[in-house]
Amino acid sequence: MAASGSGGGSRADNGYGSQQPRRRKGQGALATAYLTFFLSPFRWLVIAVGLVRAYLAKGSYHSLYYSIEKPLKFFQTGALLEVGEYFPGIVPSSVVLTAFQVMSRVFLTWAITHSVKEVQTEDSVLLFVVAWTITEIIRYSFYTFSLLNHLPYLIKWARYTLFIVLYPMGISGELLTIYAALPFVRQSGLYSISLPNKYNFSFDYYTFLILIMIAYIPIFPQLYFHMLHQRRKVLSHTEEHKKSE
Image 1 (cartoon, rainbow, N blue to C red):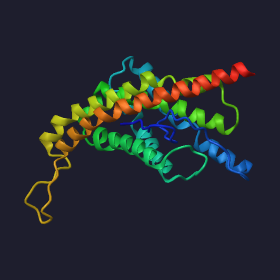
Image 2: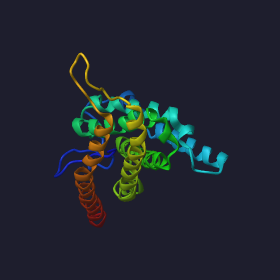
Image 3: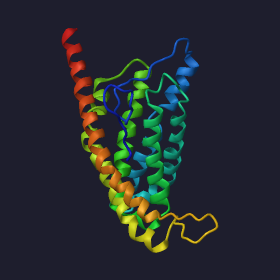
Image 4: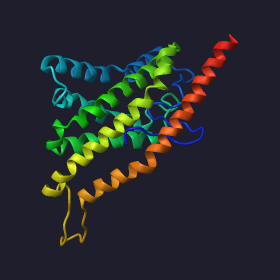
């Protein structure tokens, strides 16, 4: 579940949260420059460019995953740095919700797509990679321009509108990829632990993946409708502000 959110007026950041990055008192130009680089969409632009170049070279969207496999693993795993609130008060994220979003993506990247080689050619992988890429380019652009106190309305609008398509697209890709991995996981016994063993403990990775898929059912609608609520609140506030000027 690559996106995350929460109800009410919390500081949730699912890639489309309502908060904006802000400077702390006394934050110098060097710190601002560093944060601007950290929050830059450059990392995900690398993946976007890699996808486009591979598509133009091959003339097909099939198996494009291999063209961006390394940067995807590197950048998505690097997102774990966000979980530790390295920039408290600046990056507007709940630690728990950010951890949920990041870990779910890291799980899809490593425990599914990397570990089950057979699914790497599935179109569903491209589906969630494209959704993640566009979402993160918009999110980090939003952060960067907000930090520089110059946020174009188009970026704000994109952040609170494109999730309507991107979120279901990403979720569908994730679920289809996990589903495609199931027969290979069952056949190979990947990450499963059978009894008897000295720890008297068993674990069935196949069942675990099914439970993860079921968990999407109650979580997805809550997060999606929360984001729709945030969209109405933020964009309507923007329109009212424009009228008052």
